[in-house]
Image (cartoon, rainbow, N blue to C red; front, side):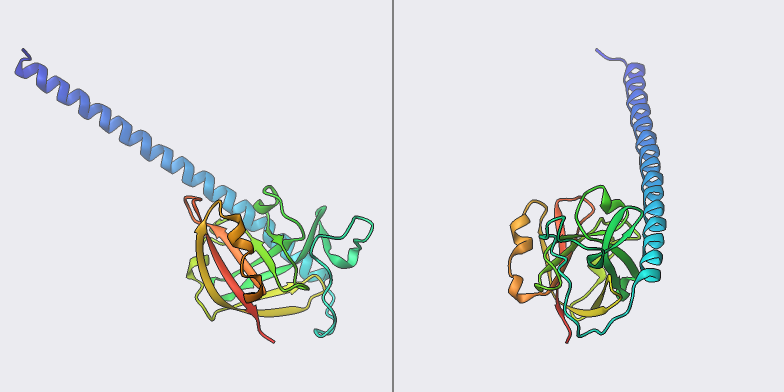
Length: 213
């Protein structure tokens, strides 16, 4: 039979363990937040550098000229330097600007998970076929605030030639993180899609947009 002293000792011991676990949790959270802030800062600095390089090298041409083929379906022999701009050995097809949340980000010509730490990526489609899909990480300086964009808000895409196109958000969707097919559905109802994952990564926040002509 436990004595009162033994019971008190066990309570103190359990309290000590809980306090220690709480301290470990707080320290781990602080370390994780510091790491995330460092990653976000590097991503912001890199993307700003790329945007500056792209702006310097874009050449304005008449907006009614034909779209370039940036679908990624061309063979290596068919690709030309007129389809993209190379910055630091990476190809970029343009710049995406979302005034509502104050972001201006470069868009890579192709998609890779590693490249998403420096820019947005063209996931599929093209301007020419009116079905371009762009994706990006939910970094604080990237698309973390995408859920603050509303239907009717404007999104601008400036292609590699310096021609800017305005799109209006006409539908907002929340889909599962593994529902890849849903990203490609309804292509005739939108001209541009933009998506990012939520904080947990279980869902994707998708903006469907129509071009304003």
